[in-house]
Image (cartoon, rainbow, N blue to C red):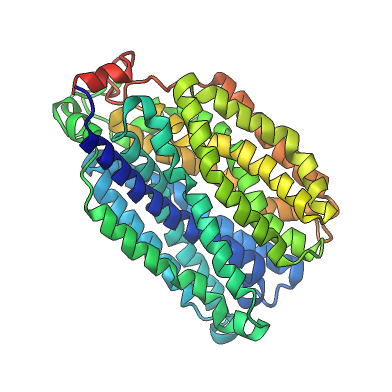
Length: 459
């Protein structure tokens, strides 16, 4: 049956809702990263001193990533059993309220050790919810999109990191105009409290969505009653988490490798570089803020282009291209950053992020989700991505700061760290299967050989 205009309008509605949800996810996480680089060392770790205080602040940034795999498995299992939509409403609410609560926290001078303790606790709640948000948001789009344009539609929600970066950059552009007294008393709270606006709008949009067609027809339908072959042999049916860990572990390992060339450069350039450029190179904060603002705008056409290409030639070639670009630009980026020239710094960011990272990031939602059967897709894609987040994302600012050293002179170690991660990703892409024609309705007990367009005609 051919798709109707109503189907396409609804696909765009689901995409817009997931885009806003992912924007809130990244806004919450990145506003924390920016604050950790700029104000948290003094606010929550004043006794630690400059370099150690920065490491401590980035350590709390990493803590959020430790909770993400647990959230991914918890919410992924719920999403595979009870539905994508209802699960996403929960993750969104917990995530937003945790960020607002961080903006209301008193500092170390007010409540002493309780300040960093509460900060870490809220960061854990934030990470737990984020662990279930990304996977569900991408999957509900993927399962509602036209089969031949799955990559294109699912790429747009994944630009949420850049729309969030735009918002954060604009908000902090105002915050940076404040005096130190204003910044450290109330100014730093503004970006956190503004997430309430995104939360209200996104919850309102998400409540009006339907459950994804794949979940309605396959996962929650009669096909869900048939256990997978290994489970049938043992006389019982495995839950999504257990089945994913026991049967899909090769795909989890693949995702671990696939994430390095995406997460390392992103957090390096949007979190670590803010602190490094200001404290080590003496660059004004507004320089990198402006650069990131421009790069974030360019990310939107870049995602559309790379995702469209992946729908035509496959996920693997586009993904490999992005990883290769990250590999060859790691050292040149630091040279351009050290030049102090706005134009050259912008060139470095465009090469690493818009050419390298964006090629990977645009393909990642479809690629990861297509690796798993319908009845444990949420669990597999979310758990795989978030387990990898610990090693490939959350530790990046901390590891990069430690590698660069107190005076920042060991930056070649940081560039080598990025190159090593990109190499791991290229190896993972080489071993990964091509997925862009896989049937999304296939469950663990099915043969996933039928093309997606044939499934669509059968609707």
